[in-house]
Image (cartoon, rainbow, N blue to C red):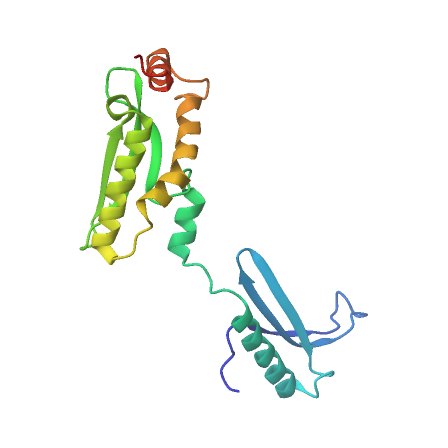
Length: 196
């Protein structure tokens, strides 16, 4: 084997001036990381009958391990999931100041067009109410993703994932101290039973 195989690393440690009593270690180590978990195993040259035999066993083990483990997550997707506060990539909630000095609640979404141009939109919670703003954003995000690559989570699944998280962020208010008076009144009116 001339090229060093992926996920297999050579270990050669022997006595040194700083550590003359160190036990010599020579072999190959398999290292594979999946879903934040590191999988390692060491293959000693001595135990496996030499450098090449130990390498063959290490590669064999690595191949078996890679078949068992799930595929690595796409780094772009992993990064987006780490940043998502709603559970739905491309959908978030924010308080924006429109220049009036008073932050207003919005459900925002962003997506890629077919030409990979990034687009975004926002739905005002004051205009649509929270539930409808989240629903409209989920529908638009679904449609945009369908158009871009034909793959999109179902609208209802997106809504069921995002709504509780967005509702919690909304109820915390723009500075974490609860809803501003104007938004609290709207929230109460939405939750009140309809008059006969």
